[in-house]
Length: 254
Ligand code: ADP
Image (tube, rainbow, N blue to C red):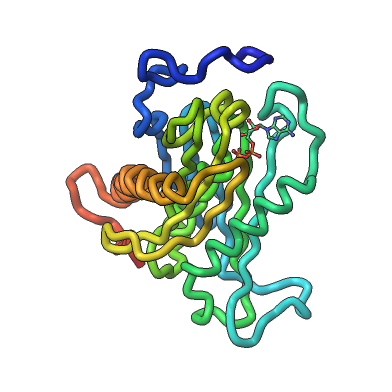
């Protein structure tokens, strides 16, 4: 990858990686990849490679953190030292703490936490390789891992970013577009029964006009619906036997 800004981020109406403006990077989702977690998922979104592990609902330690009325949700986003070009110092930093916080708040809106008083649902996401949009990849993986763990939810969270590069809105920006673009706007949507119910997360750095923000939202919704289908397919694939019989009752929407 070039260290300096490429002269153009869009050439002949195409992006540097050949994608159309409204095209996602290739996505791969695998469910139930970790033996010891209650639910897990490995997900690739372009060059991002992430793993999500869910534990719980389980007893909260230390006990003073228990909430008698509902489960507490904990979310830890962590980047492996080898996930980026320059080695990243291991451990939490301001960025990962912020990403963990906003992602946790997004999941608090979908998990039916009132069903599990005094317990905790722990979501760990590990970024093995990052190429912009790692928080969105992690939210998508965590959603699938939560379904795999059987955690009751009002729907599935699906996340994707929109960027503005060379004055053009593009879906699911990769590293060069994120680094050198004019704006980057990650979204997460609550999707239930193939319908977008609400927005669980919006962030933005850079600048967009009011009109562009509206268009970015529409573009993100389109991308989210495509990702949602892949999330569902991955879950169905895991829970349907070769004979086509479901081995376990799984509701991907609740
Ligand atoms: P996101 O990965 O959700 O887009 P950012 O916009 O903060 O989050 O980061 C964009 C990209 O910049 C990351 O995906 C990663 O490729 C790179 N990056 C982030 N933090 C670091 C870091 N500490 N060292 C090197 N590269 C980083």
